[in-house]
Length: 107
Image 1: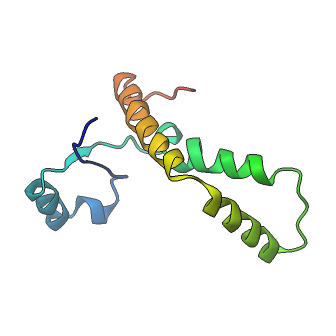
Image 2: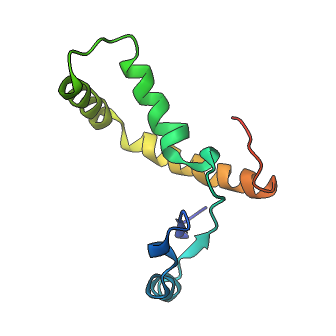
Image 3: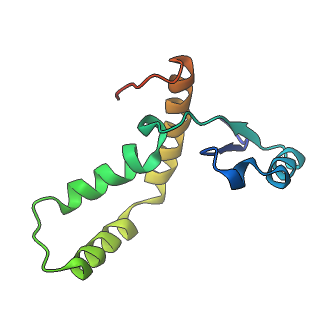
């Protein structure tokens, strides 16, 4: 991907606003179209939640505050390199999704 900047948006109204489109065009940011409701390219679905579930599974929590405390601790432990890998995967997943016509895929 190099140093090019991409903006993958979820087609929400703020992202489609004319002022946002003009800003992105003025700053040479390419917009990647987002298939609706695709878990294949949602970083929370393919990166974040699986890691949290792996770290928190089989633990019993007394209350919601304890869940929040432990989840926050695990989120803070995620590495910057991991997030870099996540966004590299995101681009590859996006390409796969586009090439597949928006159909669901695994892996």
